[in-house]
Image 1 (cartoon, one colour):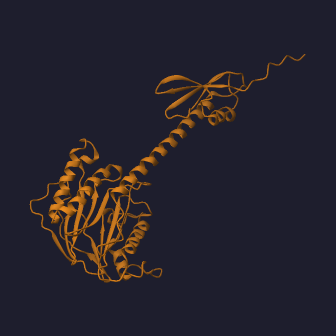
Image 2 (cartoon, helix red, strand yellow):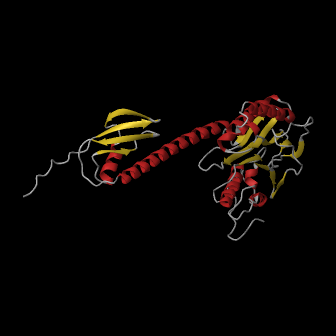
Image 3 (cartoon, one colour):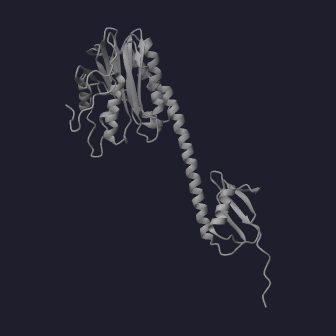
Length: 371
């Protein structure tokens, strides 16, 4: 004689109780993510009579799910908790990635406002500049540059803040903001540099003692290009630019620079360096130490002098073409993974010259190296 079978199992109904910050509050039925609940019940196996757990669609929360109706037997609680842990980890990962993308987008927009795109031509000079950030996926670096036409001549700043990423952004803002005012106000480069020193000191005083910016220093190069091409500079621990003249490339100076700005007080006397004349057709290549310190997979430094010699040997090029050639070589050298921020600023004297018709360096046959 067959025994009577029990009533058919009814579909499970769930009630979610969100536990957020250690407190349980009833939230009613159907407040869980239906897709998540269905996945846990249908994929893992039969639900027991009683309760189990799932992650709720809120950050840092856990949902306790109570099965009110009878269901099939045999589901192992361990499998449920494995699904719970997996769901929590995946949800937390998605949330963190979303917030990281937002933070990077905001920081990138802030730096774009600070490092305003340079015009292709300013006061007869061809300009091109770009930077790479060591923070993978970010557009934020600790390098800075600006070119401004003033009644005193075209004034240029190139700098490198200690550190990189978001922590350096405030220092970049302090230095650039001060330069944009002082470049117009001060009759000489020494006055500009002292204004930058005071701005950096004020910025450091507003930081907490243990904040990364509290001990920031900046390597800095100031240039002034007069209408007749006369070139003067003040250098605080920064690499000297290279000059491309004809088919040669060489540093504009080998003199010892001042200490980096912020590391020590500036000396009382600030004599400017006379770098000769920036003649029509000459190209200046300014860069940060992240360029020359870049290494390849075998630990070899980036050979900037050789690269610039090859670029100069290709004949007259626009500022943009020179910049493109340098960065293409740098990215090849580092495997597109720079370990430090790197920036390059190219200034070509196009005064009284027709613009270059060629925009790319001539490619050498395979096997030819830099001459």
